[in-house]
Length: 136
Image (tube, rainbow, N blue to C red; front, side, top):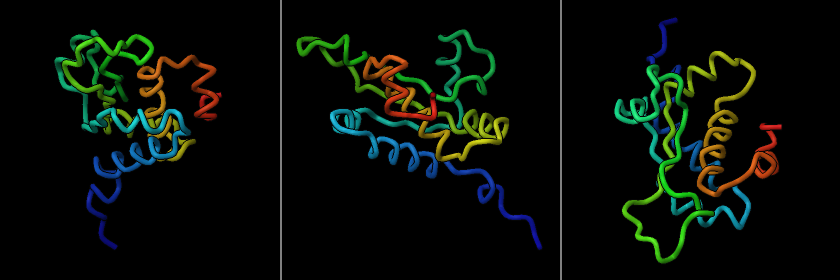
């Protein structure tokens, strides 16, 4: 038997994106609808300037990031210079998945996605646990 192609082993960017979109689609209302207004960006690694701004030196340290103004701090009179973005970083997620060895990739992507949306919604840890019981 020959070895499968590398992308047949590690989940692709598209697969991670699908899992993240599924996590958003499964959010309960009243969160689901506003979550669909947030841009989901899936990249292999965080851009260098993002890592530098966070004083991180290892791109494997960052699995996701919320970029925007939390809904609890927004005002309808505030200008919106750019859309809110939830970033997921595939290689860091895969690294954590491999290190853990005790969760599915779907559960981990859902967890990271919900954690980043928690920043967008201004959720507390209790709020996160109610939506994503894996946090408990």
